[in-house]
Length: 134
Image (cartoon, rainbow, N blue to C red; front, side, top):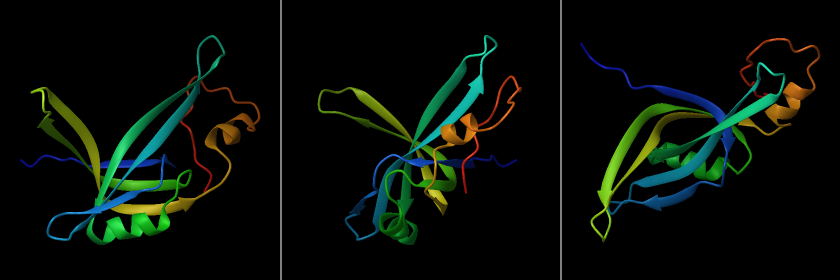
């Protein structure tokens, strides 16, 4: 049986993508994406939790990300999780988990999701998943 490693996120770009090239000339772009969920706790307080994803795009997708994405834009990213490890000069081991993108859809800019939720009338659910304005 084969495994499955698939991730889909919708979030806000944390900084403009950075582009570099491998020694053989293949483009790679990196950028962070923040996904935030908001809910009402049992005591009535509004809570918010943000998760950051390090996104890596290769080839033509890297070039599109560099050209089109800007800090603050909402984006859909689909791909797989990959953890890579390395050893620093002092012999310490480090690890970084990244979302290796194979698809990106620009969702645009707009009011923040937190603003959209706070403007809704009569929210009564115990937990609410944040929705993004598209």
